[in-house]
Image (cartoon, rainbow, N blue to C red):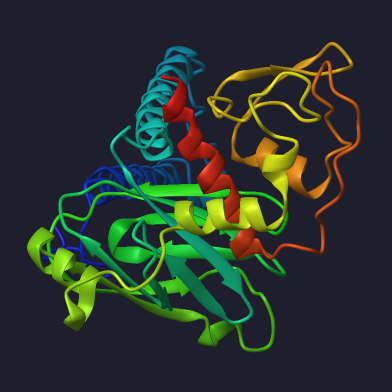
Length: 315
C-alpha cells in the first residue's frame, strides 16, 4: 500500500493498516464525489447553455428520485464511516491486559521515559517488537503531544492528569518521535527516536553491558518514597488506622464521605496525594497532609505504581 501512497509514513504497528485504510477510503470517496460534481457541472453547463437566436433551453425535469437516491447513498457512506471509525477508535483506546507499562513525563523540551525495571532514557524509547506497550503519560509544565507517525498513534500529554497510549510494534527498526503540540519556542526540538528491537535484544538492552539491572523499579522507588514520607504510618491494615488500607484499592470502587463513589484509578490516586481533602474516604477524618509541591511528577508516578502493585496482594 505504501508503495502507491508515498506520502504515508511506513506502517510499523498493528494499528497502522487500520488507520490507513480509513484514510484512503475517505480520500477515494472525496475524489469520486469531486469528479462527479465537476462532471455534472460540465454536462449541465453544455445541455442547458444559452442558445443563439433567443431559443429557450429545455427546462430540467422535476424528479425527486435522484435526490432521494443521493441522500440515501450519503447516509449509508456516513454510517459505514461512523461504524468503521468507532471500531478502530475502540481498538486504539483499549490496551490489552498484558501490555507492558512505560512511564512518560513531558517537559520543555524533552521526553523522560522509565521502563518497568527502572531503566530511564530521554528522547529515545526502546521497545520489543510484538509486545503490547502502554504509555502512562503526564506533563511537568505545559500541554505536549506524543506522536509516532509510523505507529499512527498520537495522544496529548497534560499537566495535572494522566493520559494513556498503547501500540504494538510489528517489526524492528528506528522510527521518529515528535511532540505535535506547540509547547514553547523550542517546540520543534522536542523529538526523538523509537527503537524497536527483537525481544532478545530488548532484554539485553535492559540490563546493559553489566548484565544486571542498575536501577530500582518504579514500584521499588514508590515503596521507598512511601516509607520516607511516612505514609505507612496512617495507611496500614491495623484497626483504628488514620487512613484507609491501600491494599487492593486500585481499580475498585471507593465510597466517599459525601455518599458518592469513585473508581480508584491513577487519576484518583494522584489527586488524593496532591489534594487529600478533595475526596475524603467514608469513615476517615480529613487529616492527611497535602503533598502538592513536595513530590515531583516522577515521584508521583512511582507512588501510584507502588499503590497499584498492592492490588495483587488482596487477590
